[in-house]
Length: 132
Image (cartoon, rainbow, N blue to C red):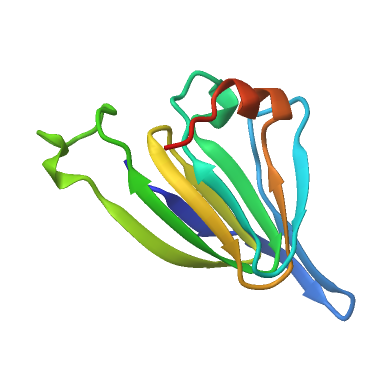
């Protein structure tokens, strides 16, 4: 299980600004989220019951954040036992895409005002969100 963070590809840059692109096979309702500097979001994990939360797919459009994460005991993984549960913390700077697999507790702390898009609906989240 790994969180995947990738910079979003640049298509063009000119005097007006930059154009980035991404592709997705998801459709339906998505979330456009604004968070204030210093705010904390997440503090949960997903079991994978909702296809749009496995993995959770987030596009950080503006700002920077700190993503803290830890593996949840008992989820299927490549390890022999849960004694090797991993955790970590990483800075994410826009524009970037973050993929968070099921079974990973995660928390986002906004270092600046941030804007991100979650490629899922509120219903996807409410049906597959668990707190420790």
